Length: 392
Image 1 (cartoon, rainbow, N blue to C red):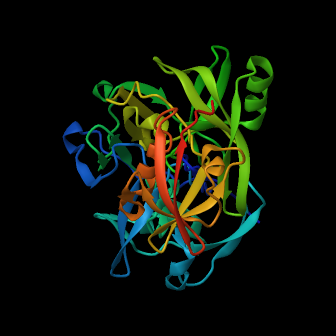
Image 2 (cartoon, rainbow, N blue to C red; image 1 turned 120 degrees about the vertical axis):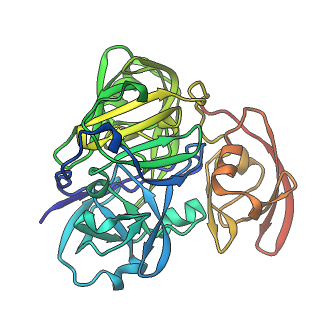
């Protein structure tokens, strides 16, 4: 039986990571060496803020949102589309941040990302994507993984809010920024080697399926805690096998190529990765066919890194914002907010007018900031006020 790794991180309030990996991605197609052919094959609008990147995919005559995820080795379809995938090809074991699960594997059907055919993925998996849909407040019907993406050059311009698939060519492009070597582990994950705390080399998976700054493998995280003794807090991870709780802390410094970063927040995980909150500081070009990544300083390069300051973990269910859980001793709990409460208003604005990631940014927006909410507990409606509290 093969092996799949599954985990994904969405930071803010409730974290959800899906990283699906089983075997290396297929060899890229032959590419042109003519710079004139370096054209845009497909282009999409994306959030400038480092929110999860959802791209429109046309499948069986309908349009669906798929998560753009370089931390997922294969393309994934939600179980709601399983009946359209045909006969099961095989079963693979899936390793998650929680317990192992099993995933069905199918031959890739025709589905179109602009003019690009996701059938080039060759194989796809099928998983239940209900939780990431509830976290995002939008129905996520699939994941675009590395067995498709590795064929392409992909430029993510967070300054202008665009993601472009470019015609691959072999030439190097210093105008794209600082060039770094991409390597691939035995499961097909793309990673770079960087340095933390001036003396610890770390292999970071480039993971656009995670909207956090990133994570450190448990051994590295524990070494950091024992040597530097930084202040830590805890955060939730929703995995394909359930919700778990892990630690997070700030690290003094990170070096990536010629770039230096300070006071970034990293969580503890089974493997180290860099997510969208980190990548969105730059204009990023992923030249997978030539095993390079380019980073250019963007408008958000100097942004402060923060985590949730409310203690609230929220889902959107049937257009309502529901409290999934509340951290013990947090400002929200002290204000009387509890699990299953429905949030009706935030700072006098109807809660259903908030995008889920806009709301999460509000709840990490500043120590001592006042937050007013109208909540429904059972049949009772009440107003509460609390102050955000910086954890680390």
